[in-house]
Structures are given as structure tokens and as C-alpha cells.
Image (tube, rainbow, N blue to C red; front, side, top):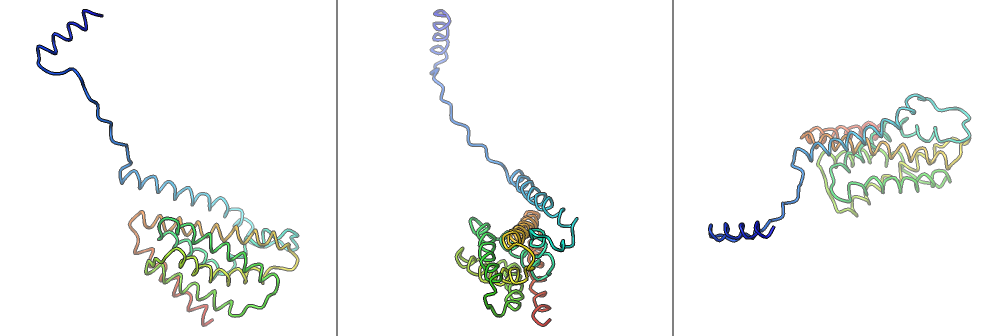
Length: 233
């Protein structure tokens, strides 16, 4: 071992350079644009698969069960029985998909929270006027936001969706059958709303990842036009 070190010393002195070597740390590995797109698509597909998992039982039992003492099934299918509710729930998800950072998740979460409050008001029979008009206007406003790819402050976005969520929630609660439980019925339409929000977010994210933003904005315009049918109908 000593002879080997001495021999190495002769070589380095003879060649005229120092034997010390410095190693620079490797740069952190970051996924390229293509890999990032693939990962995002995988996440979107997972959301769609999760939504389909919850939707299949509902489609398999497309009619409410009369006399169901629990009411979970009735509550779950209630948002699917009205086109205005259905379009509004998906529109919230589509608009949320166009946002960034916290607003992407706070918008649907705020809608669900205020909708639950509206549902309680409807179940209690508290007077609340202009419900159908408010629901129709939600399609006009949310569809217009999607078409324009509108972005506001997080607080402003929450205030807008919360305002319209009150009308949707009141309609759900007010139309609850007398033979079902309030807690189960509420849990059902809240779960369905979350599902529709996720479907809208997944669809909006997929369209943006595949450079189909014009199609996403067109869908918002179609939703806004549908509001005319409900306003005059």
C-alpha cells in the first residue's frame, strides 16, 4: 500500500498536476414538459375513473325508490333530475379548472358548503324568493366566466359561486320528499354535487392539457345560452 501511494505521487509530480479532484453536485432531476403532461393526464384519468365509480350505481338505479326511509338515494339523484342543476354543477368544475393555485379547489369547496346551508333553509321552509331565476342566472354567469376564462381574486370567486350555491341548495332542500330523512337526503345531493364538480374539473383539465382551450370556452358559451331557455321558460 505504501509503495502504491509513493508510485502515484511520482506520476502526479511527473505530469505536473495536482491529484485533488472536486466533484460538482449534479443538478436536481426535474421532469420535462412531456413527462409533466403525462403525469397530469394520469391524474385526470384517475379523477374520471373515480367519478365513474360513483356514477355507475346511480345509472343502474335510475329511478328513486318510493318509501325509502333513508333518502340517500333520492338525494343523490336529485341534481341529475334537473338539467339546470346538472349544467351548473359541471360549470363550477369547468371554471375551477381554469383557475390556478388555491382557487382551483376553493371554488368547488365553497359552492358545496354554501349549498348545504341553502339546503337547510329549504328544508326548514324559510321563505326565499327568486330561486328559479337565481339558478338560471348561475348558468348565464358561470358559462360566461368559462367562455371569457375570467379570473378574479380568490375571495371574489368564492363570493360569486357562494351566492349562486344558495339558490341551488335551497331548491334541493325545498324539494326533499317528506318521507325521507333530512341528513341522508342532504348527504346524497352533496355527494352528487361533489361528483359533478370533479367531472367538470377533470374535463376542463383534459381540454387544457390537450390544447383545446377554445373548445372549453365554447362549452361555457353553450351553458350560458342554455340559461335563456330557463329564464324564459
